[in-house]
Image 1: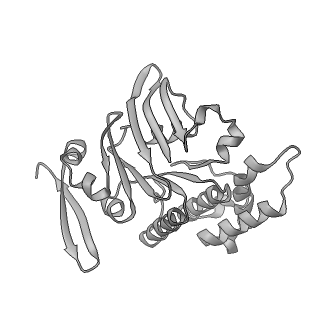
Image 2 (image 1 turned 135 degrees about the vertical axis):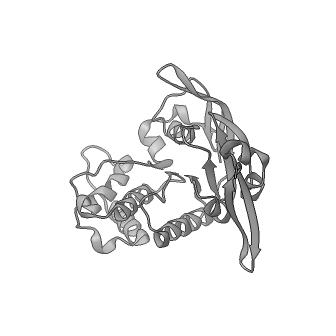
Length: 255
């Protein structure tokens, strides 16, 4: 389990996270939701020390993340950012980057590294494109390649910042289904999501942020039905039932 306690973060002298506290359970999908600029990405980036925090603690299974070396941290947590450069390398070489935390100098890949890369490429459905240059892929294919790199890192925790960006509807569902399989296998999956229907059907746990603070947390249905959701987004959530379960859509509060 990941536990954040009283986390404060500032950018250029302006505080953006105001003592937030939240827990993300093991073997579950946790969704971090909230309006743009509320601190979602900063929270995830803090967990991998891409942004320093002023105060507070970040714990993984009772261990303070601040005491881990960069390589040790990268063997525990994989991070899939929202936006990335497009390197002039093949898909396979990109996915191999996920194995860097396990390599010593000089960097020589082992059989285990290649096996993890092959597994990751097959998992995301890019096995046939391993030799293709990243610049020649579609946006959705690039997203899959970076997802494969995170999988090849073989960590207990996977952070994904808006992972369905650039994906068409079919591939959005495919990625979310893969996230479910990872969680069912015991991984701790934390995703930033904007689509409430996806949150309702895939997230076991939800943390709602607003202006760098936690408004509420709990099950997806609890958070989506809460008055805090209306406060954060100025929308009215509407629910309806079908034979395959509860569904959700929203309408503007002022309409």
